[in-house]
Image 1 (cartoon, one colour):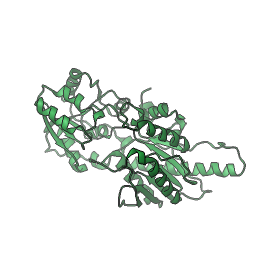
Image 2 (cartoon, helix red, strand yellow):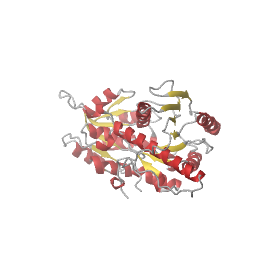
Image 3 (cartoon, one colour):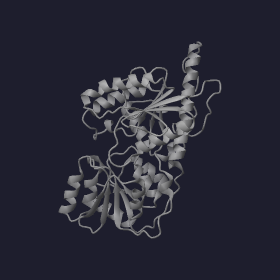
Image 4 (cartoon, one colour):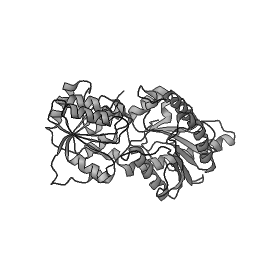
Length: 391
């Protein structure tokens, strides 16, 4: 079976319809809107429009289309287990048909719900993991085995998850992140480039800002950074000042302001050392910008579909040459069919309904004395193809 969602399977009319879905998304947002947040809002919208009672457990007060249960997980590591038990008890009490977990909880029973574990990036399985990453790895390893499926955002990330957590590849499903229609609107003809180089990412150590600055040192290129500070911005600003790099800094932009900033730039760079997906890559190509990105497997995957230059950001001369060459290219927008949020959310809804119904069938057959596992898994509905990634 393909493990990207490719063909639609209608739920069986002999089983009761999916009526309630709970989504556990416990981390507070910082700075610019992330792909994680947009995915959550889009999925809630489509679930609610389909007549499904949606419950969101997370650090928000309100969300259109959902009943919200305020709950946060920004607590010390030693308190995570206790909070995980509280979250599990809350989720179990909702009596949902399906539960999507944006973070792992302790592998306790969540009732009869079909449980999907979402993993946006498996930083916990890399050298970039934060303190307590090994414990988080153990949580994910246990939860992914207990869940019906693990959902992730790229084929590159799927391979890392399968390898690090030792999971069955058929139980890990890929659904890309996407963009809204605002990214597909034509640019204003009056806008001219004010910046040569744009980088949109939070200021964390693994995002590669310092590798980029090594390449910009000694040039007259105008660079603009957009992102919230996760500990590295002061270092980046100091380096720019020391080496007379012409740099501007923005954060907390609206989506409209961010689109405009892309339109005012000539080249997008992505020097990150770790990404599960990397939505700014898609945003840049949607605005026609050439992209120069680091040698991550997911960037090869995106470049195969959208175009882009892959370069070793540990080689400053090569990076500088790639940027200068990209600046000579005219802006052009590739096909973005696989990266539209509305289509992705609709496909996720169809797949989720089919997965819940498939599990009900299995449980029904088992209760009737049939052999476990006699039914095939649901047909896939996501459009991304395994051939887009590298082996």
